[in-house]
Length: 498
Ligand code: NDP
Image 1 (cartoon, rainbow, N blue to C red):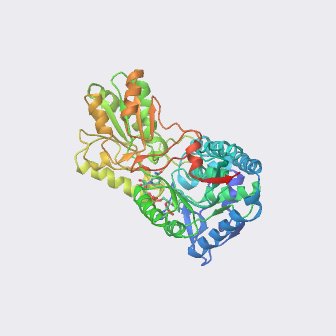
Image 2 (cartoon, rainbow, N blue to C red; image 1 turned 180 degrees about the vertical axis):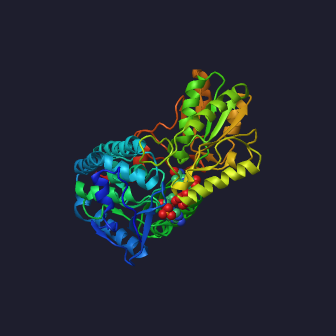
Image 3 (tube, protein in one colour; image 1 turned 60 degrees about the vertical axis):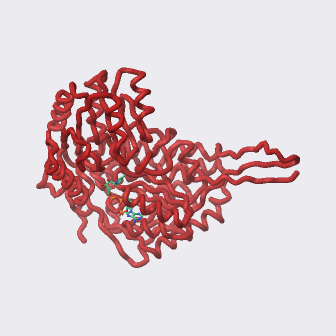
């Protein structure tokens, strides 16, 4: 295998990471190759060239990691560590993520394709923020004394960690999704098997190394690079207590079914087709700017992308032409280029999937307003031009299904009741957005929309303290905040005759 030379604009730290010829698994505090020696390549989506050779964990490796995680959970320093010390370790990891922010942002940009400027602020900045928020939790995990009816009885609850957690993350925000899962699990006192997506393993590997540097005891955070088989082996392992998954609804259903059969705890954060509704009284300039970012940020590869735009019929042409103008002027390019607004899609497979949707939109009669083609095809990378369809129909595949690329589908509407009903009609319920200057319309519509997050005059805001998750086929459970922490805790009721 020939690995491409690291791009020149990389920092020394990112170069030195990439110069390792092989990137190993992290099991029980040790870096190790896969038991059967298998590896896979991670590619630069801007060129299609391999950038790293990574160990591919098989069933043996998963089993070894589960045993290491179980031992760390039950015996040794992690099991007996005070809540304050646990919090301090997570805080130390947050600091290390910040200190290595430039390197991590560059690795994320190179591996995923996203603009490095966004990776620094959004992916790395929010990852550190997430760790820091959950670093504050261990000392606040409290049980309660319950005023039971029985006399001479002390009844209280203890909050205890769920146990060994399998955490399977996707490729669209690799480090951030890892931290969304790892941070609450560690805060609760669980131990973790982290499985990054095969397209984007690099920052998870680096996170594991930083956790060792921070001083986490061996076996607390294990990193298993690999593919869907690795993920399935984690889900199937009988000694894994909980699965947390972010990814496609298809795989989410499969994991949910398996977790149900084995009675494992499970959190699923899945797809979306999120309606973004401009109301007749909206500030149109702000709505156009926000709607642009809602769909084209991260080249549309966001579970909560505002991929379905509804505009009052009287404003439709104005809004669509303003968005089309912005799409035409958008800078598509490699993520490491500081000027890039839209990077490539993560893989050839994802580009082909998105192009397949664009073809279906054309074939089913949506009007292609702008885009519709692969871009920068000489580069070898997986670029797709920002694309905008308009249609009156809600039945087309592009109007109903998650595309997960830079493709917006805009439709006109006549009344608020009609648009709320159309916005709620799909299978998903992850996010929804509203643009309005009317307080009462905002709150009336926010209550009507069946979605886990509703954005009013903004899109995609997130905070480690604010719950995130989906209604309907967009998932089960919530991440972030109290709800996110609770997903890693069991409640034990203790009865004592006194
Ligand atoms: P997947 O759902 O296949 O992948 C997500 C994660 O699950 C990856 O780590 C993957 O590993 C792992 N995985 C795959 N199969 C299994 C399995 N049977 N058991 C356990 N883990 C498994 O998503 P894709 O990468 O295939 O993307 C397909 C579509 O999914 C996208 O077009 C998009 O619509 C949606 N998606 C949604 C995301 C979200 O944020 N909600 C994120 C990513 C994708 P590996 O990649 O190594 O195979």
